Length: 262
Image (cartoon, rainbow, N blue to C red; front, top):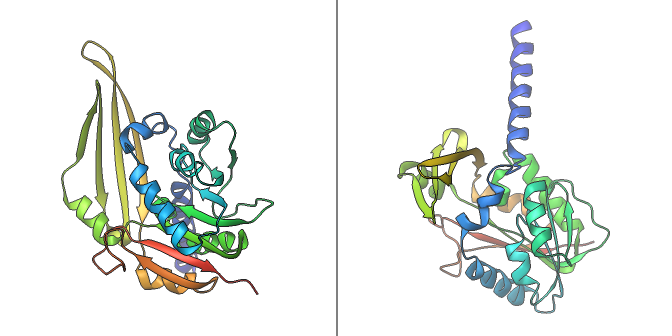
């Protein structure tokens, strides 16, 4: 009995660690995020095309896990946009870019906003950072509650295939003027991977300042995701940006879900 109690306590401890790890702050990475991510206009155009295709009358859009606000800024050219994110450093950048946009510091698993939206989006594998599927389900529920009738939820994920390919490959390296970014994906046990991010910021001559952050991601089977989504949405589709329908080989499928209200 004592051994079983210890095991249960240890599991709870591990879960607490995973929950804390899943709440990414990007405290060090935030100031370099836009430079590392580069141009995101193509992704924003694809998201806009999905909104037009599945809710052509949409006028209001909420982006959860909006980060530094780049996608919000592009979508604001066509929609009344709102954003939320948990990371204070990322939101500081977003608010500086978009001073007239409503942006909230809230957790995407428990957010509450006093309005509903025609579309809600969550991109760049943000949901993969939630390391328990119970938290994915919380996101789906919160999104459904904040969508208008016939509203659509659009989000993407990194699949096991993509994360495993990255883990098996070499580190990603890129110079940004005099600064150097090195990112390596490792892991894979129980579908959990770790992005090891190192930024060497040029100071002077041969001196660099190191910013080091580790960011965890997990992925779940497509069928498990779809099954959970169908509890809240009347229509669920998985799409491949390079094709009409996502297959088992899709590395970054987009899910498009139409809300079901009683």
